[in-house]
Length: 273
Image (tube, rainbow, N blue to C red; front, side, top):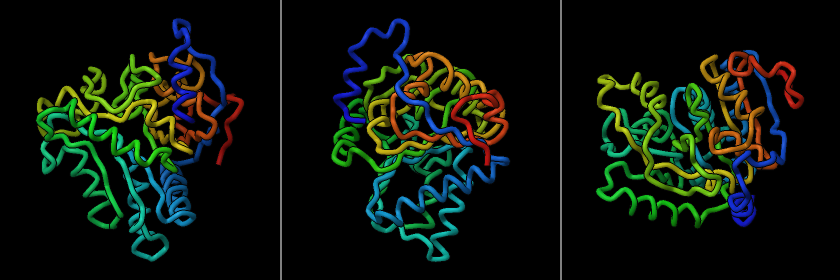
């Protein structure tokens, strides 16, 4: 989507939600592993088609299998990422880069300790002024828009967040410092050795940054994501469910396992693989 189109949506009366413009492709796979296979294949094929591709990448439990497959393909010489440029969706703030709970550490463990890219960009969780860091990162990202492929997850419970765009995030939002939803904190704190150490805020790409991508793939696995997926695809398009804004984009695929897609058996654009 062009930024001008996003701004047009932002200027509309959103009290009742926006009118959806597209039905995303929805693919329900038999197993979580086949979701990983699909996601890795799409990223690899993008880089094979254009070695200098620009990608937006996610963190969390869902994409770990995708990264493992990309690393394996790199080792076997199937894909060369050395010319690719990547942007991460988000990072906790404040968060030291070396902290094992940081998304910078996550990305090194799961991908960048194993493959080389032309440039890997992630918001600086150590930045003393998060608003200034958001502005810096926005300027950097804007130089590469529209990115070729954005790979996303969806937030836990009823958050429906993309990146850390929690409920209330407007369609024209950009990179910014945000407070985390209590549901997000409760779920993500389980990944910390000391759950009380999870920050209450983060730096995140905005909805408008994501919607400018040429192609978007949303990954979801597990029953805990089923409500959010159903809400994003069947409810109103509004900031109450940020993932619903994907229905304004012409090239979106929801790649789900059976548990995440359990409410979509009769959804009109669903296919099974």
